[in-house]
Amino acid sequence: MLSNELRKGGGILVSSGWVYSIWFRHNLATFKEHLHSLEEKSARKGIFYTEAQICNVVSLNSYLHTRCMVTVKLSPTADF
Image (cartoon, rainbow, N blue to C red; front, side):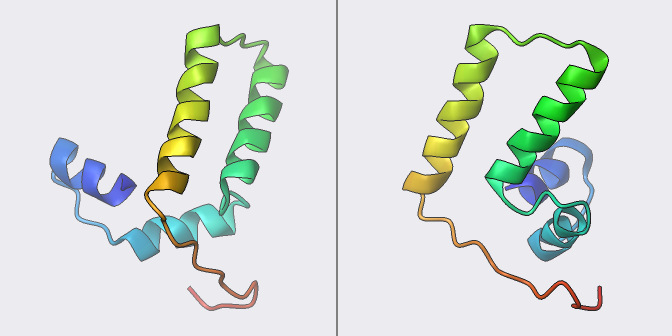
């Protein structure tokens, strides 16, 4: 999904596996980890989100689950 957006928007060619490996390396492999990171960052910087922005995040999560996306579990010792 992100790899497609990078390709369309800026002509950057990356594989979805590469995107996932970067997320995994930074403890962002799951949606829950993304939300936790977003909460920490907003608390540190004093950022407040509107109700519409929060609804967009919830909608994205629902969309991803209905599309039956498969999460690949990688070993923490995997060599990237």
